Amino acid sequence: MSTDKVYIFDTTLRDGEQSPGASMNTDEKLEIARQLVRLGVDVIEAGFPISSPGDFESVRRIGEEVGDACVVCALSRAVPKDIERAAEALKTAVRPRIHTGIGVSQSHLRDKLRISEDTAVERGVAAVKLARNFVDDVEFYAEDAGRAEPAFLYRMIQEVIAAGATVVNIPDTTGYAYPENFGALIAGLVEHVSGIEKAIISVHCHNDLGMATANALAGVAGGARQIECTINGLGERAGNTAMEEVVMALRQRQDVFGADSTVNSREIMRTSRLVSSITGINVQPNKAIVGANAFAHSSGIHQDGVLKERSTYEIIDPADVGVGGSSIVLTARSGRHALKHRLEELGFSLAEAEFEPVYDAFLELADKKKEVYDEDLEALVGEQERTVREEFHMESVQVVCGEPGIPTATVELVDREGNHMIDSSHGTGPVDAVYKAINRMIDVENDLTEFSVKSVTRGIDALGEVTIRVRAADDRVFTGRGAHSDIIVASAKAYTNALNRLLISQRKIVEEEL
Image 1 (spheres, one colour):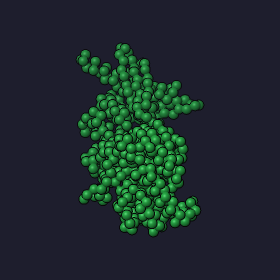
Image 2 (spheres, rainbow, N blue to C red; image 1 turned 30 degrees about the vertical axis):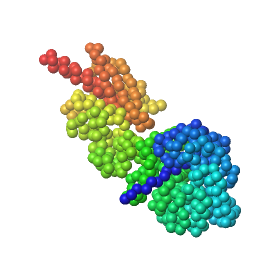
Image 3 (cartoon, rainbow, N blue to C red; image 1 turned 180 degrees about the horizontal axis):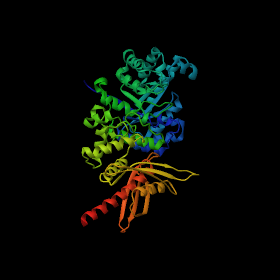
Image 4 (cartoon, rainbow, N blue to C red; image 1 turned 90 degrees about the vertical axis):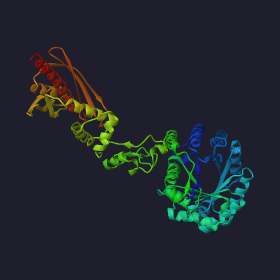
């Protein structure tokens, strides 16, 4: 199958800027324009010069900046002063295009413009002819074409092509169309408009019903060869066709569309982040292609498949859009394969007998947290290593504290022979009460010399790690560590760990003397 080129017309700096809160100054627009050139778009719609001095300056400077790397386009209404102002701004551009047009739906003709169809055609033709006096490349937009009467749309497009339009833009301005009828509308232009082969058919779709990308692709299937789109789908109301979505859809499904763009897709993520940073509009996590979760997997079944062969659950290689790679997000739904894989990446090679307790601890923690991080895993492995050789194992701990009230702790320990011991005590605080209860069961002389607690990971549900130091009767110092989402439990684990080290050391001394 031969592959046609689809031109990518980026309107982030014009239509995208119309998103509430997304306005940009000239320097910011220049920075994005430079990145759009690196991305390899064919056309940059730089602004609407008549609307403000800032937009005029942006078009002028972008035209000066990009040289012949791509077409620089300026928007105008079908009004002489608009077109003249656009032409003035484009004098610095090596490859200038004026984008002019008029409404074509009955709603626009009757309620907004209040003119007849004949008058609309006259104004459209006059606008194209005037624009051709300034530039060779003129694009005509038939605003609200998605709701226009097809016969009138065909007439308008035929007339403006005859007047010299090189590109005809068929916008679904209100996001009203759906793929089947929008694709048929484009196919109807190809079939019914005399001279249509002299112009490129462009589509400009809005996302009011969530179908902008689908409609744009249906337009390509119908014969369009230019897509007007924005980075991250910015734009009026619900936004425009998202550039990253149509580019990757065309690339992945050339078997369906027989067309592709020449965009450097490896620059997509960098461009997305730049636009998000400058506009302050964050990308939703589940946004296709550029969302934080676009290549993240948390389901155990999916993780197992991706680790065995990426294509089982990913149709796009993350590297193709500038993402480092797939992300395995460890949650309560993750399986053994995903956990083992991540532990190995962190440098832990655990035998099966060592891995199972870590996996059990991981599931227990994952049930309490949305996501388990690398630091959590390191703490869990450390916790497991600390419990391999124990004189006493902390089985459970419960505390009652508050104001007013006396902090009280009940602790259950299990010794090497499997005997259970339970005792309670009170103290100045919950940790003090826990330590006193442990001391009542493990009778070994020691002084607590240091106690510290830190958050292992971020968030309110972070794993806490407690480090303590105790001094034995012979002045040797032993360190204990414990990690848990409950700081009191972590404190009990740390103290038990330190006392186990002390007791094991004392036992070794006795054995050596014997």
